Image (cartoon, rainbow, N blue to C red; front, side, top):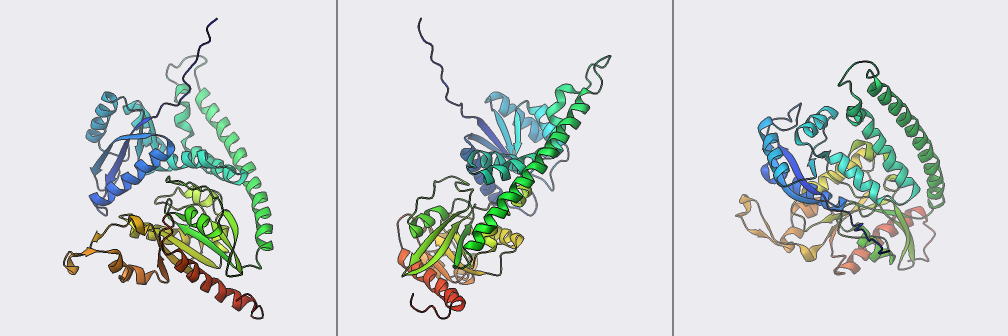
Length: 394
């Protein structure tokens, strides 16, 4: 009998992106936001076919975008056989229900997409529990759309109320699961806290920054270890700690999860225990992708997240990474529209406002020795203050 073979390859989903341009945003900003959303889709395994935008004062309550724009999206989705539509902002349960009913395809918002990526990349028990908790908290107010097939559509005997009772059952199960996950995370956090206390004697530095700026590459370069790194968003979810020695001076270096614009609130809350390494670090190394056209917005996003974590009053070194990919940018009109080169940028207010700063390429190993020397001086300063009699190290 001839054996049959089946193609088990997962079909790449075709995706359409949707965003609105509010009065406090420019078209260029929204374009950049949708490019980031397309990168998220690529990271999740999808393929972005087209983006739609609409200028609005605020999102439409029922369908997020106007009915005319939704009809335009529907025509494209139908003609191109699109599998999924992703919106750049968080949708309410009723908006998702209304849009799905109109488009007849899967509808996700930015938060749901990020949660899906985190779920696929979580490796340790802690990361898996944190992501599952965030997913359940996100799902809880959206249960109604999952049970539309049990709504009272026909009426009559035996057709009353099964949807509502099933929703209540699911809500109870989810709430119980949330309680179990919270207890599990408390236990893991206590274990991690014990580990951190054992490490409290040494100076601790933590790499922070926007996602995909090269933190893991720098971690591998400085600690000579093999932390997973790739050109995708959220390559690192779990905090990695390595012992580093520079000129006989030991310290601990942590690599943490990257931040991103509009990071779902549930995710921030669930990952706060992981980010304790940031709160308890002596030195923060803020890594910036200087080649990114909107790195200033990324800096603000990271600073806002650090403020939310209560980790702003710390020594900070700003590392402008990827200088090998930097392209001269257009300066402001006041500067006679000159091209701002890398050397000009080093002297600009942005670099001075984020001092001490260092410009490197972790990939090409450029200015690595200068970075090590700067980091060594900061570690030595803290070590000297903490152990004034330990002079043999330096």
